[in-house]
Length: 259
Image (tube, rainbow, N blue to C red):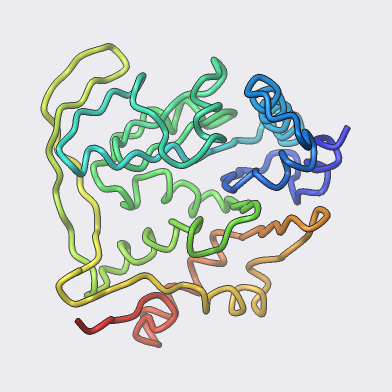
């Protein structure tokens, strides 16, 4: 079965802590060809998730992005019902009974495995603070697997490093909206995000990190047929990005576009 071959091609070991991200369109097209039946797509993605779970074993942990930015617009967040806005992988993970959802209303994750309960009980107010799932991935030497997506579109972890180092081209912004928790209790809550300074014309530009990661063995690139798969050691990536912030004025992280 092609899904088994695909998962076998991923650099995953027993006990790994994996952040799985990506665009599965090319893989799905290869498997289902012209049959784009929704039930078949859901079945295939669940097979991929199941195979990864089997591969990491009982001591492993799997995280999947389930981000939702409606809270930033003042719209209510419901941890059980607010949808994932980062693709079908997170959407399907949230529909499974064996995954839990972390609590931050903007940057949440569907989590499975050894540390799922711990992660689902984090109370971080900051999107990228040291007590967030990003901090957990850093401290626990997690890996990010990026399937058929660019570093720019998938590597949100860079904002965690920027936050920890208090970069001057971002600032902390507080968002307020209604929040419904796992017990169906609704209240007004505030959460923070270290955001770009748009008045300065700041844009993300982390493409240069790719070659730096590869040169320093923090990332490897593999292919499953023509599908590009990046595997990033997040602890090593943290050190490289922090060094760029401290010693290179973060030139490999952002640009200023003058209006």
